Amino acid sequence: MAAARPVLLVLCLAVAAEGTRLRMRQEPDTACGKGFDSLVPGSKDYFATASVELFKHPGKLTDNATFATELQCWFSHMVTQSCGGLPSQAAERKKQLTPACQGVEADGMVIWKMFTPDEVTYFKKEYPAKDPTEEGGLEENTKVSATPAGESLISYKQAMETVKIVDLKDLLLPPTFRLL
Image 1 (cartoon, one colour):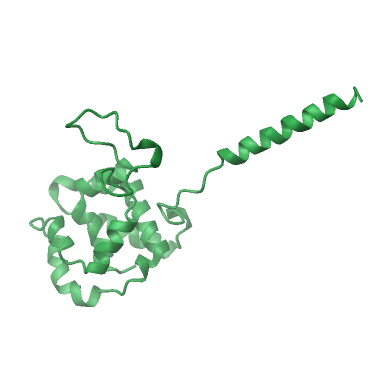
Image 2 (cartoon, rainbow, N blue to C red):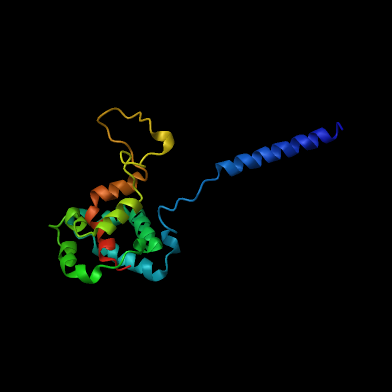
C-alpha cells in the first residue's frame, strides 16, 4: 500500500496538469478569417495589386506597407466570409466608384455612403476592431476602466482600429467594389 502512494500521487499530479493545460487552451482567433497564408494564389495576387492601386493619396502612399498585416487580415476575413454572402454591387457602382477611388478629393465617408444598409451591418458586425464604448466592445473582465476621464480606451485589435481611422477610404474600397 505504501508503494502505491507515490504512483497515485504522480497520477493525480498528471491529471491536474492536463486539466490546467486544457483550461488554458483558447479558441482560435478568427478575426482574420482563415488567415492570409491560406488564401489561393489568385486572391493573394489580387490583394497585392489592389493594395498598391488603392493608396493613391500623396500623404498615404506607404500606408499599404505600414498596415499590411491589418489590411491582409481584413481582406482574408472578407474572402473567408465571402463578404457575408452579400451580392456584388460592382456593376452598379463601378462608374461612380472608380473616380472616387482614384481621386484624392473623396474621403472615406463618400465611400461609406455608397454602402447598402446590409453592407453597413456586415461591416459593423465583422470588422475586427471593436469600439470599447459600443455594446459588446468590452470583454466581460474589462468593463471597469482604469482610464482617466477624457482619455480614449484601447480597442480590441487596436491596430485594426487605427487603420479604420487613418485609411477609412482605402479600407472600404475592396468590399465596395466586391471584386473578390
